[in-house]
Image 1 (cartoon, rainbow, N blue to C red):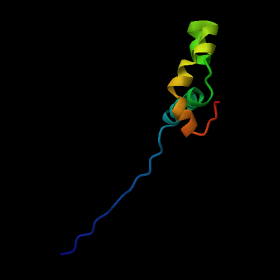
Image 2 (image 1 turned 30 degrees about the horizontal axis):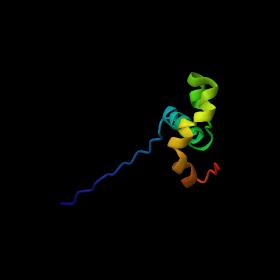
Image 3 (image 1 turned 90 degrees about the vertical axis):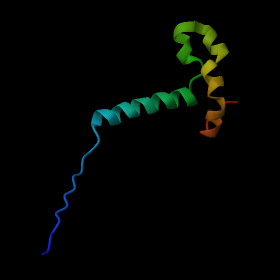
Image 4 (image 1 turned 120 degrees about the vertical axis):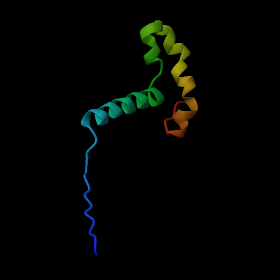
Length: 71
């Protein structure tokens, strides 16, 4: 007796909402690591945030590893 197997495969695409959300998260992360010079905290702290540069200092080594010069 001979049995045959039928294999079906389905191709599903990831939801576009998930891709859009990940793109926004990526863009925000890139802004923080590469370009933030006090802009993010200036909303709360005002002009003092441009002198303190908290996000810059927290992501300093990551900036250099990603190829962003900062000094």
